[in-house]
Amino acid sequence: MPSYTPPIADTRFVLDQVLGIDRYANLPGFASASPDIVQAVLEEGGRFCAEVVFPTNQPGDHEGCTRHDDGSVTTPAGFRAAYKQFAEGGWMGLGAPEEFGGQAMPHVVSTAFEEFLISSNMAFGMYPGLTHGAVAAFLAVGSDAQKALYLPKMVSGEWTGTMNLTEPQCGTDLGLIKTKAEPIGDGTYKVTGTKIFISAGEHDLSQNIIHLVLAKIPGGPEGTKGISLFIVPKFTLDADGNPATRNAVSCGSIEEKMGIHANSTCVMNYDGATGWLIGEENKGLAAMFIMMNAARLGVGLQGLGIGEVAYQNAVAYAKDRRQGRALTGPAEPNEKADTLFVHPDVRRMLMECKASLEAARALMLWGALQVDLSHHAADEAERVAADEMLGLLTPVIKGYFTDLGYEIATKAQQVFGGHGYIREYGMEQYVRDARIAMIYEGTNGVQAMDLVGRKLPRHGGKAAMALFGLISADIAEAKGGAQAELAGKLEKALGELQAGMMWLMQNGMKDPNNAGAAAYLLMTMMGIVSLGWMWLKMARAAQAQIDAGEGDRRFLDAKLVTARFFAERMLPDTGSLRRKLEGGAEAVMALPVEAF
Image 1 (spheres, rainbow, N blue to C red):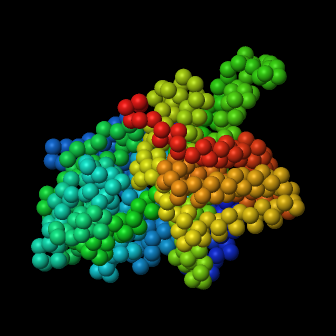
Image 2 (cartoon, rainbow, N blue to C red; image 1 turned 180 degrees about the vertical axis):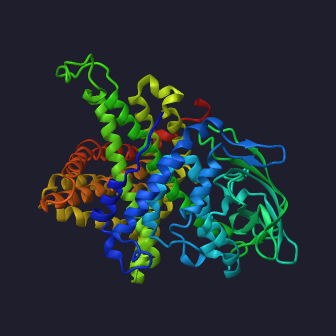
Image 3 (cartoon, helix red, strand yellow; image 1 turned 60 degrees about the vertical axis):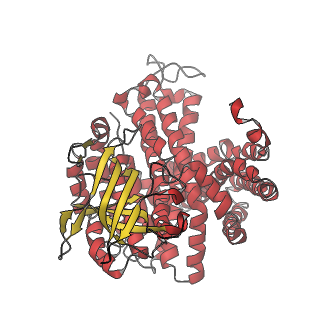
């Protein structure tokens, strides 16, 4: 049976020593995020995730969700009780505004908790996860009346939310949607159509489900310019704002999926369901992108969360499993065999996992801090800069982190050998669950094209230049200190990335296929360099604590060794990726279709 321990010490190290969130105590939300409060949130949240949610993970995967003849859906045993504790504990509203019943903690703190929740049970975490996205959309484009009506119940967890985009004939190309919303004349619309792949579309965890649905109003512009966003609750509300009449929306079926069996991924049928416009008419896609951007960061977090729990179990197995002898001679002569940890290739896999995960956690929390700064920084220029930086890194976090999550899950499975392929040990579930994160909320290829086609050239490349300026400044500061070697290797990797971007700028305009063929490689390079930057920050923070005689020396020494491993074994990948990138698109596009 798998196990899970929330990485509280590592999270605190990033929050306190690397990000220094105490420096932002003057900003809204941060004043209440004192070190003691943050520690309490992480400890209690970690306990809840490990003791209440984690035990539902493997049984929930085995049981899955059940659709009944009336279109209702039952979640696996234990889910309702766990969700009840989740809502009653206030975890849904951890980062939500106080005016709607939330605790208004910084996003960087709520993100740390969400990692624990995902590691404990990714499928379970998707139910509140989609609700967070819906809440973000309400906050951004909802009217005051809509916010007052829906948000208190959603923030409390009494109601949940979804996002309905995809249809059988369209996924990424949303201009092809057919769902219609016909105005009735009383401020409501009749929404008719079919949506597929709707996570948490129907379930028994909450009193009501608030669907946010993309649809076209007849007579509107063609394509994406004619898409509007509608609130379509499972139950319409009475005069007091309570669920009353069952709306004409139902779950037609539950998708039979490779993984995340315990999340009800539904085909949703809207048969003239009553809906209300949220935001402006024909501006629905922009409103939905608010949810999608939040969801993309959340999906990146899924890569981190699944990778972490898979890695933890691989470490535990490698410490316990005895197989063969060390190449240098028996490590434990009194035993019949040595543990897996004596084998360099096993250590290679585990070190690659560890080095990736700890840096990914740092970058994720750094990104979450940018969310806080984009809303609450005292200076307008700082708010804009944080928002631009977040926009630049969102496709990297979604795309690269989910690639890592799947890769780490398969490496963890590999450490188990044959037992990793057996259901009992849990590793095959992590591999299956991790796979979807590379696909939904925009496939990773789409993320790469978003990075290259939209985010990098935006405002003349201002955000990219700002990011490279931050990295270069940290490199310059580190060159004269104990981390000079790490700084030098990061500088070389940054140079490879910048050279790759320059090649793309020079050749992408000549042939757009060059940009398409290079996009994924560039996204990966940017991910590696970004993690290398986090390792430089962490290594310097660890060294500073050592020099001051503070902290846990074993923990800090491990940081320095892992930083060195990343610099020596992983940063050099940027060189080979650059050479691939500069190969261009000619060979990629040369074969006629019939030759495949």
